Length: 479
Ligand SMILES: Cc1ncc(COP(=O)(O)O)c(C=O)c1O
View 1 (cartoon, rainbow, N blue to C red):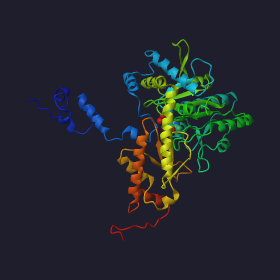
View 2 (cartoon, rainbow, N blue to C red):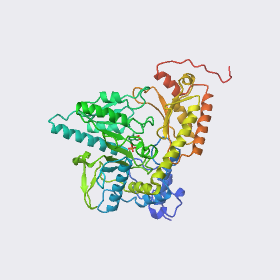
View 3 (cartoon, rainbow, N blue to C red):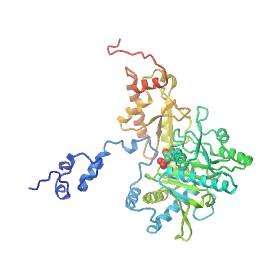
View 4 (cartoon, rainbow, N blue to C red):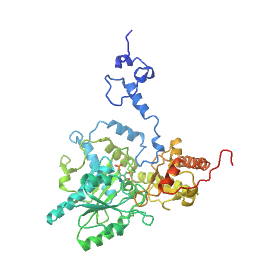
């Protein structure tokens, strides 16, 4: 009989049950590639098992990213898994589909562009799309400054301190100064007066956010546009707006079509969004649209002409998956305007329900009375917090035991002493699941309220805040 010690070739293993194989007695590779091939069944099992214990994606209320698509969408995307979008000559129909998606989004955002193909680009997510919006604003500013014979070495942009980390990356990678407007208890969204006061001739753009990652709120783009109109008329600086609509881009057109935050506003020249958030496509997909081709600097655009017209291609990545584009186009056809509206409406309804139930709990304070997006945050009620032996971080840990991921975190600079929890309601989180979550929250709080000793996170919080609280502890005998 053949000795199969240290032998992992397929000939030996295909006859062995997966869990009876030698390979399964070894640890998975961590530093070096294994010497020999492993049978696909065993390799599959090993990789699958590495992710076995993770939270169920639909119980993850931390992420904004799509965790449910129907079986036809999944099939289409799986069938297109081998398409590299950049190979447009091989897959010209995918390029056309991409351009159709950009047209559809441009029109959802009330683009005035008259060209048949609107100016925009597919991206891996909002991060790439935001970068493209920022770079375009920077290049436009640079061109203007050069033409006026002025220096171009000190560009800056303005955003609230509720920015997503991509804007910090943008500032670092392109060496553009990021001027932040603090969020405060008085200004829970972008303080427009303050934003305008930070502007100068070197400001490439202001970035309001529709669906602030930290809070779920929307900046008031219409008011910002009006303030910029006055500022630009006075100074001649012509500072534009890039809207980071990572979540809001697919919420606003369906739930608040009358609200003006998009290309209807004069100074909004570009908008970015995540197709993989409320665009309802699996990750990674983002989009950016410019108000008109005129605002997309020539240096960023590469044209192809096999569609009977020029289609403009822009992007940081070269190769990228094409399947997500099929997924987005499928969702547009499958759901239509009314389908998207119904899904976003359901998300809002479930979010409103959970929000109102959490607002009723004496332990908590919700950050905002009204919801504008299907996500919200809450903190511990100040009076309750004084004597609570636990923190929201403890509640996060307890909820994990039931599979829920409900993140607790501290707020950005200037309100960093505030700890909050956030729930993002996405397609796939039903009212029934909401009830299960609320019951779990209540029963874990009941457990936490029975604690004899303050938790480590509570003690750490006291230490950080610089006060030593005298805890009245009860011994096990109840004395
Ligand atoms: C406001 C905002 N901008 C940008 C991003 C980055 O998006 P993505 O994960 O699609 O790159 C996010 C992600 O949550 C976001 O909330």
